[in-house]
Image (spheres, rainbow, N blue to C red):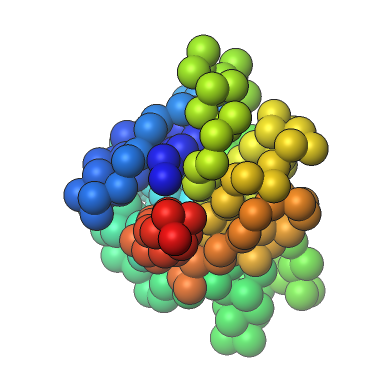
Length: 225
């Protein structure tokens, strides 16, 4: 059963490579494009810690990311942590679920002034009494599907959803005819954003590419039975 990867680069092509290494019939049909934004580092002495919820932020922030290196860094998912480490920012803690849970851990440690390196379009968190200051460093914008999109989703396939925006866009483009399609989501919130009516929905055990592809692998093989 084909696997359709929809996340933008940087990251999308790497997911396709990992999927093919697992023996999956992966097809890269991005539904978004990601690009860096101009940003200026604030006075970091005003903050207790840096929160990063996406590896895209670390990959697209650019050289100014080094200006934030003196803050304790909290990352969601191993891919985000690895991208931050590669950029020279040691990670204090890696969250294994999502940004809201990691924010809860931070506030439980009396971390109250938090700088959030994020996308222009971002999730809304319950700040739990903390001061959470977003610092957008990249933007993710929708693009038209590739010409082969219609043909690919007309037959049984597995689609990957790496974000709530991605899941919602997949759901919109697929429409009501989805009972023959399976979806692998990186978190329960992402799965919820995709809606109902799929042949099956699998949720990754952790919010990272490896766990998501393991779930996709199971769905692809389940579809062949």
